[in-house]
Length: 501
Image (cartoon, rainbow, N blue to C red):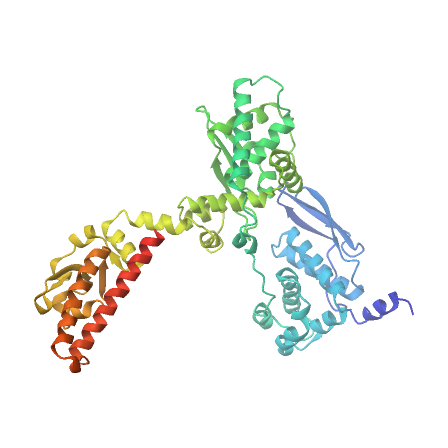
């Protein structure tokens, strides 16, 4: 028996009975969002390779890997997705992910999955399907196909099971792993290299606009690099910029409009202003570049990515992709103190959640927040207390008298050791003997004051001991001992704070 025979046998049950389904249409139309026009797919039934245009390139949706019945069901699934507003790129990705999963595991699992009683789906998914999944992408494709079977009411599937399908677990994957680790961020030295080269190229065009020092392709590459560096645009956004999206004003300002990508709904374009020093790059390219039928740069997203990778390698010796520039620009914005709303608007996100990971990894964020709050004396005091549980003399002097702790235990005047957050008139304990052990006590950050209080109270303790050696365990003496220990702890904490500073 050859090695190919078991594979053929495993595919015998990999079939869906779609005889009762209506025939496929003669053609299907989809919207090509790159060239902004509708296209058609012909020969849906006879062809197992559907030719489509995605991001300006020829692609094919491959159905040849599935047997007849399943092959037909997959075609109906893609047609249903395109008719209900799914993008052609998404459906092609779904079919590819489903193909990789089916051919990478036992195909009988897929056969059992689609023909199982839906009530048994959660248990079957957890025991048979979940261990074979590689990530969220293949599980999303499988769920999409199962929901399609629900809409078609295949076998025992029914639309009411769609919610159960959506709730099925998927393998855990940290989508922001590279951001948390920091490996996607471009070092400051390399960022400086890119900024300096953009400045130099723009300065050269500004001083000698009619020279041939820079070829038109080099100017184009610098324009692409500036869009990545300044605004972290995706390759698809850069490739979709049209000539009409570039607007030059009499003042010398230049605005670029580009669409939001990776959004479920078609959205309008957003406008960004190019850094004034780099506008000459766009003006020169707009003036001398050959006309393109559709787009300003005449490139596909894949070509944009390759240009960025090649250019960064040539400039600094390290290879960076547009995604690295996007993460770096976002982190740079967060480190400068931008709000979550500003970051979401900068990234073109529809929610605030996706950009929150940049705040978690920002080393400057806590310092910026504290500095901003310290504009107000009230918040400055709150920050100092929260950090060290101490107060400075300046803050203590601005505190109301009823909250400043003072007293004369055993005739020894002790004052200015700190403040009570609730106020002495509301305290039923002896101020000096109890404050150091009280959670409402906030000590002044001057060690000498606490040393003086410690020395004074030690004299009182000595008088207790000298008066009667046999009664040194009296409640008053024990309370005094606890106070002395608390003062010593306060001094130790102040010493460690000073050492950290």
